Length: 300
Length: 300
Image 1: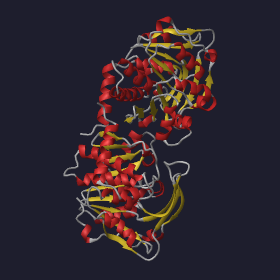
Image 2: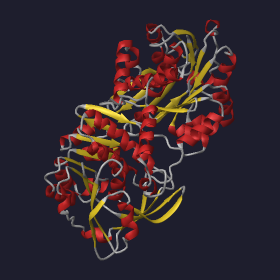
Image 3: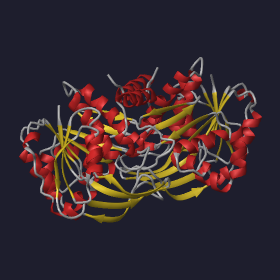
Image 4: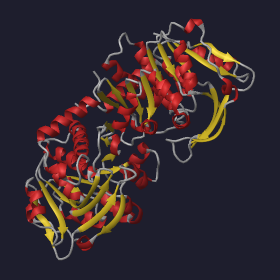
């Protein structure tokens, strides 16, 4: 089943201990859609500037991602510059230029309106809500957010949470939304705000799923070299939601496998700069790593 | 098979968000031996002062732990006071009084000399090495250490590492010994220093086993309430090594199950203050939680 994703398509300048890359193609919707494209059809809603050309478009087309919802407008695309020199687990932001993103008003192509799966990537909760309301046919809605919206845009965020089936966030964000430092208690508070399912991402330690009264933990693979962690969380979300959307039924077992696929895609994302790795995977590579992850926690 | 453990038997004053306890029975050897006692016979080598009496002795006896190696001497027992008010993952130390521990010279009862399993809990590496050399019959030797020894007693610690089969430490300690911030690379450096097997504990995120060219990750259970994390790492070590010692063969599959038992015992330790929970477990309770952990990462 097709997923529609709304979020940022951007340029990133990234420095890590492995080196520096200027103006890589990035953005949450880019990582998410590339990752999900290995599992199901993906349709993107975003806005880009005049610096987004044929070469960038080709990255999406090579993965058969529907880009009719990417609006082209005068000005420059969203730009982010950050580094991970001291700590690979936390980006230090140097520059955030919203550019055309500052006046983003998501427009939904008619061809997207039958999407049964909707992913609201990390953008202004006012826009997340607008998209959710404009797509009432979506029967499974997942979303992400970040500390900035949690701290300074709480009322709008609470409205979004009401309309979400699945929220994917990290430990800090979970505890921040709940105002509670115990993960299990915080998860319960967050789920009472709307999402029946909560996925808490722990970076290099995997992720925890709270779903249907059960808790499930997927490992992350200890990586020999983390080249660039940018987009790992969005790639996790793409693998998780893409796999779910590809299944005939979103059963508890499917949710568990989806957690592993999320973890797999997050680990691939870290292996190269930007979206390099996400662009050139194959499904057999993905399934081989899925089996490696299964082996990683398998008791004889 | 019997395990001999050398380490601290102490009193701890602990404050956590759940409350405060004055002078609980504690110490690495105490947590380790209580935890391991659910799996195999345990013999302790330690030193205590005049404040260690029949009531404390009874805690060990109730678990059939051999205390003939606990030396009673004039003075006070090792005392530690700490709190976890801001962060349950990291103790803030207020007081460390070594007391009788300052001149600890481990004496090994003859009755302990046939122990095939030896655990060197976190003490001065000079003492760890002395005990290891005095027990040449031990065929599987595991140990722990901490940042203080890694930073300021490196040459002595390196001598200990040469004689260890298994080292159990946390993420920070692994990276500190190796001088490398990537866990996989750091693990390789540490293992080149001696231990063929490395267990890296990640606190609430479980632990990773590097063994026989393979990597294995055991989860930790997300806990509804962490009452007191003191001794969780030593209880992990007790469950891990106790289970291994109880097995006819220390096969790769036994190591994997040992990781789960370690994680199980670490999770129990956090549920009450001090050693309260470690004193009153039953093997069926332990195995029930083992199955819960297995379920926690089980793919249908």
